[in-house]
Image (cartoon, rainbow, N blue to C red; front, side, top):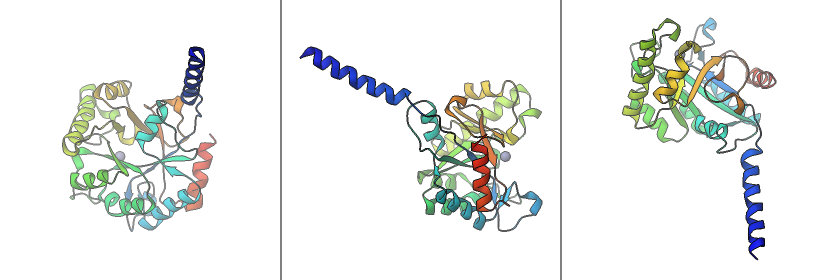
Length: 255
Ligand SMILES: [Zn+2]
């Protein structure tokens, strides 16, 4: 009897471990958007997309069988704490434009899609710029939907290439602190402005408490074996038709 129990226990353990370790290494593309605008100069297509085109993009992802996942989902996947769908995708926005709240958020809600917005804490609620930025109240509303994550895109959006060690540390820590104080969350997501970093940046980001770090990259996708500190993102041109978007994603998944 005792032997039988041991055998069953052994089998259960083997099964449990096989679930943990026999995991796939799905490649996950991260799409990077910025502002959403009704009109924009054609040459600024890497910074803007119209609301109509953005909606077409989200529809195209759905039609192609992609499931939007959160960074938290991806983090759990990389750590071996959860699985993700074979065709997973992450939708990200940089800079924290008000248009993300006005246009993208309702569209994402309509499709039940997840996204992450990396905000520049020094620009929160700034409506003095050509393209205004949303405030903490809007950020909170989006967070509360369960669809949106908020991460740091530093405090002043200066390139780390131009900053001293001390300035880098301040940018990393100040933005994290302000997000946590104003939104009551643990902010562990970071995206480097312009995608640039210095030798010490990742180390300081980890020391500051970030667990997921995004570069830009603009090529390829992400795999569990790549870890969480150099996530590559594909900047999406507002010019891409839905078919071109899917083709661009497939091309990068094949790299
Ligand atoms: Zn930016």
